[in-house]
Image (cartoon, helix red, strand yellow):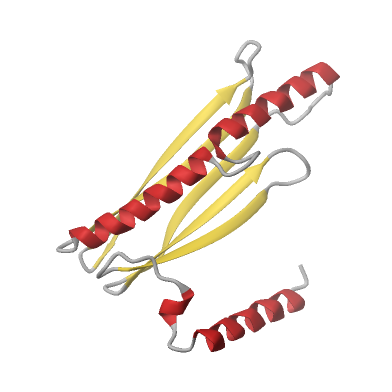
Length: 174
């Protein structure tokens, strides 16, 4: 739980695990996610709007948006992976798949709340995959802020950010 200026963000962690369909002795899936809940002293409507948006993001993560996302699809993939490893007789095959979302508070003041969602997925292979999504909210209204809301000159800001990202990638040795 973090707080500032009458703004409180609490984060609850949910973890679901699934075991192999044969005898249940091997862990084949760990699926976990954070759920942020916002309280704003004197700003109940704004908090409700933010909580509605974060609940939608949680639901989308849990239900998924394609093969290999969401709990049910990850469970199907984990069972298929387990069955393939067992039927192929692969020694030391990676049995456990992982899907995880964590949430951190990146900014919290009397104007803006920024939450950073970090997703991690391991579906086999050499390494997992990471992805970050940031969401900024107007603390007064609860409105999800867009890039257009952050600048009086959207085109100039978008051009600057694009150049910055391209420069960063081109100059990063990794």
